[in-house]
Length: 103
Image 1 (cartoon, rainbow, N blue to C red):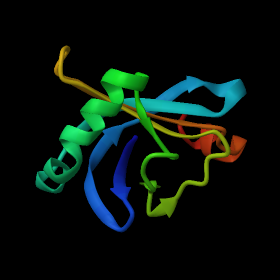
Image 2 (tube, rainbow, N blue to C red):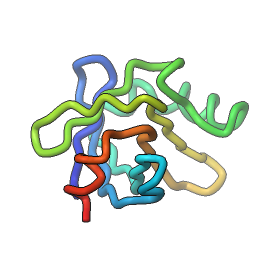
Image 3 (cartoon, rainbow, N blue to C red):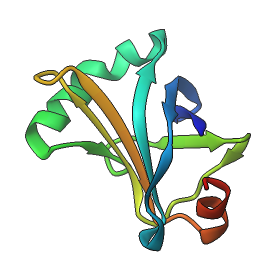
Image 4 (cartoon, helix red, strand yellow):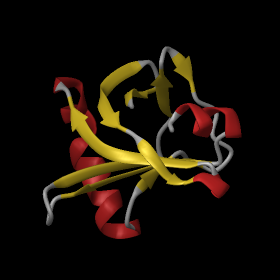
C-alpha cells in the first residue's frame, strides 16, 4: 500500500508499505524520494551510517496512508544507506485497525 512520507509538512516521497510484524503493528517498505528529499539526504545518510537509521527523534517524520496521518506509538525509522544505495522506511506500533487494512 502506497504511503506518502513527510518531514514536517514537506512531502519527501512515498513508500510501498506491507505488513512486517502484525503483532507489533509494524509496516515497512522501500522508499522512493522526490526532489524535496535532497535537502535532507546527506544528513539522513550520516545518521544511517552512525546509528543505523534516522528516526522520529531526529526528524518530524509523518506518513499519510489513504489520506490518514498515522500515529505510531513506536515511531518511524528511515534508512538511507549510501553504501548499499537503498532507502527503507518502517512504522512501528500501529493500531490493529491499520494493520488489518494492510492485508
